[in-house]
Structure formats: C-alpha cells, structure tokens
Amino acid sequence: MMRFKPCIIIPVYNHKDGIVTTLELLHDYKIPIIIVDDGSDVDTQAVLASQEKIGVHLYRFDTNQGKGSAVLKGMAEAYQAGYTHALQLDADRQHDINDIPKFINLAQKNPTTLIYGDPIFDDSIPTGRLIGRYLTHFWVCVEILSLKIVDTMCGFRLYPLDKVHDLMQKVRLGQRMDFDTDIMVRLIWENVPIMALPTQVIYPKTGISHFNYLSDNIRLIKMHVTLVFGMLRRFPRLLRQHHAVKHWSKIPERGTPLAFNLMLWIYKYLGRRIFQIVLVPVMAYFFVWGKTARHASQQYLKKVYALGSSHPKMATSPTLSSSFYHFIQFGLSALDRMASWNGDIKYHDIDAGDIHALKDLAQSGKGAVIIGSHLGNLELSRALLDDAIKMNILVFTDHALKFNAMLAHVNSKVKNSLIQISHLGPDTAIMLKEKIDQGELIVILGDRTPTNHSKERLHYVEFLGDTAPFSQGPFILASLLACPVYLLFCLKEEDGYHVHFEHFTDAIILNRKTRDAELKPVIQRFAKRLEYYCLQQPFQWFNFFDFWHK
Image (cartoon, rainbow, N blue to C red; front, side, top):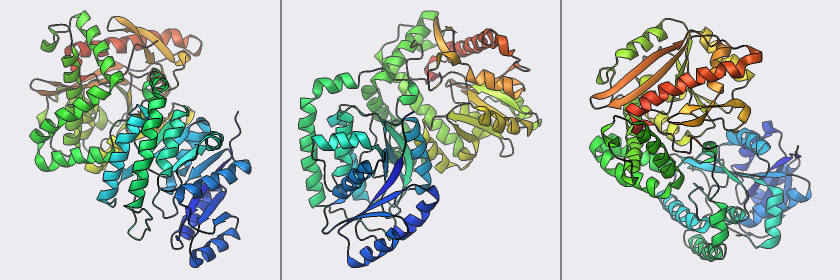
C-alpha cells in the first residue's frame, strides 16, 4: 500500500485576527501544519511566532510574494520533509474545516488524485467574485476541452505532492491569485486524476480579501491566454485523454449551486410556467455538451422501441429529438421534486391508490425494505408522507450533493430522509437493522451497478432485450435485514402522478453456499418489473449512462 503522510499548508498575509482561531479548530485533527507567512506586518508576525512555539512549522517571506508563491513554498518544504500529500487551506475560516476528514478519506482511497473543493456558496459571496468565477469556468472548459471541472478557484484542495513536485520542475506556475486555476489546469494536462468534493464556502464579514480587481484580473487574463495557446499545442492528446468511457460514479454532478439556486428562485417567484420556458435552453446546454448522457439516452430508447412500447412517442424509431424530449422530462421531474418538497404538490394531487398501502405499511410499526429505481419520481412519495413516517433513502457516493443541498434549502426534511453511504458494509447493515427494528422503512435503488464495478457483486440478467448488470447489494441487504420487501414506482401519466406499490416478497432468504444461484432469479424478477414500467413510461427512466456496458 502506498505510504500516506499528509500535512496542511496555510498561506498567511496579515491574517492575525483569524489565524489563531483557525489553528485551534485544526488542533483536533492531529495533522502537521505548515504556515507560510507571505510578508505580513509586525503584529501578524508576532502572532505566528507564538504558534511556532506550539509545533506549527513556520516559513516566512520578507516581502509579499503572492498566494501562489506562498503555497508553492509550503509544498516544496513539505515534499522535502517527506510528506506525501498537502491540504491547502485559507487562513480566514472561509473554508469548512469540518470537511477535512472527507478530504483525507478520499485521498487515502485515491492517493494519486487531486481532490478539489467544489464550493457551495451562501449569500455572503460578492457578486463580482461570482461573475469572475463564471468567466474563469468558461475558459477552463476551453483549456482542458472538457466540462468535467466545476470550479478551479477554490483554494480548499488536497494535492499529491509527487505530482506537484514533478510539475514544478517543468514550468513556472502562477505566483499570485492565478495560482489555483493555473496549477489545476496544468495537472489535468499531465493526466493527474481529479475528484470534486462539495464543500460549504463563506465570505466572512470580518474576512480580509487580498484580491485586487484590476491587477489580479489582468493577471488572470494573461494566464488564460497562455493556457489557451498551451491547449492548442496539446489538442490531439487532450481529445484522446477525455475520450475514455467512465463508470457513472466517476461522472461529476453537472451544474453549480448558483445555477441550482437560480432555477429555484425562478420557480418560487416567477412560477412554474416561466420555469418550464427557462428549462428548455438549460436542458439544451446539457444535451449538446453531455455526449455520454445523450448517447445513453439514444441507446436506451432504441431498446425500448425494439420491444414495442405502447407510448405514443415511441410509434416511430427514436431520433435525437426523442432524446432531447427525454432530457426535458428529466428537468420536469426535478421541478416536481422541488414542488413536492415545497408543498405545491399535495397528497390529493396524485392518483394515490397504492400510496394508501404504503402509508398503512409505514404506520404499522413493521420495518421493511423498499426497492426503487431511477424510473419516475420516487421522492414524490416521500415528500407526501406525514412527518411521523420514517422513510430513509440510501444515497450512494455523494453523487447529487448539490441538487440535494438545494432541496434541503426548500425543505429541511430532505436531509432527514437521506442516508449517504459509500458502500454496503457490516456497519451499514447494523445501522439499518436498528431502523428496521424501530419500524422504519429503508429505500434503496436497484438499478445502478456498484461504484467499484466488482464482477463478484454483479448479476447479468435480461433487461430490455439484452443482458445488463444489476447490483447484488440491495437484495443482499434485504436478506440481511430479514424483513418484507416491496417495490415502489411513482410515474407521471396523462392525468398526473400514479403510485405503484407492490409486495415483492415476505423475505429474501439466501443460503451462504448457494447465494449467487439463489440471487439471480430474484434480481431477474426485479428487472422484469422495471422493464414493464419502462415500456409504459420510457421517457421517465433517468439513468443517463451506458447501463449495458460490459
């Protein structure tokens, strides 16, 4: 196993009021701290000297050299001292220190990867900074020929130091506010893996900003000109580099918190009709740039058509316009999720015949596992249930954190109903068993493959005329929890939403020695029920990746 020895690097320039509190908060993590004083005033020097006495490693420039110079100095010293990874952190408490364990955990599992903060802003961010971020984001997409980066300006990130050291030997990196973007683009050019971690970022009222709107913006313009010409030299290689097919869990969540919040604002204050009008160009953007999702939609719709769906829009062979309609339905589904959590879709607004059975089960005090899917609007059922009814939805890999954060802004109940997990281990099973014993409901999706693509945890079964990989996880979990299992689909039809709640089995009983053989017919039965409803409402299955990829 690769040696893992992290440290924290903090550039400081006249942050005497905030740095002590920051260091106090970092104390519990027991991670060595390197501070680079970027030519601070006498008062700040005195504060930093007091911290050096209690174990902080302090380096100092006599004159201000810039944020980039300070971070690079810290990383050079860290590399020479034998550290393998460096977590870059601002001194003014702009970053959420509580996310440090998440960065460390991801880096331990992905030691060659640059883990960068994908900022979730609140109302404290200045408008000018937002505009600058959007301009930078546009040019970075050009410079790396990809939309996979969602932010390159957040200074909360964890670097593999060997990759940075190699890069520092090849090129002079940005020395001031151009540093964060410059180094990320160049590491991507070096084919260093990257991974985003959503994190809350604030702009404290008492915070000190050293960003100079004139000189730093001129510096950023020069940097982008240099990077664009660098991209042109690397054009063929960059195209090959981004062409590889990726598993769904490696595809970053599209959109930014600002864009999500803007759409929410349009819905709340301008109404559903205006939202639907604005939705068309938004989904057109994702349709044009989302090559993987667009191809997956076409692949799926052609399989549905071949089996003879009765849906009126499937009377002829699906085209690109069919896939665009598929994208629009996905956007409308997101709108209905917002509307339901906002209280605009009521219990009596849907054909809730089967939701009575769901409600009776939830009120019976008997726990159960509910297997859902990415077909329809599963969360609509949860949003319409009483607060007293406990329905826990298992969410894998942090894959939709930004959209879920927006929903939580609409209604705090969203947070209470989601359980973030990275894998189904014994600790997860014990925690869920306790919930079952307390009469709660556990909801897990049955139509996505495991994030690690482990063949031992897959079963290939018939689905829409071809063999497709389905995860064993949901069904093994139901077996371990030893409780009844139900299927839940919430589909939008011509007269509104319809809830389909089906009893699947009283219990999934598996023999350890013959488990795989016994699982396959169980998973096949679920796949056939999913196929049945997909043929009824094909434009409501929202798995926009190559589900049949082998």
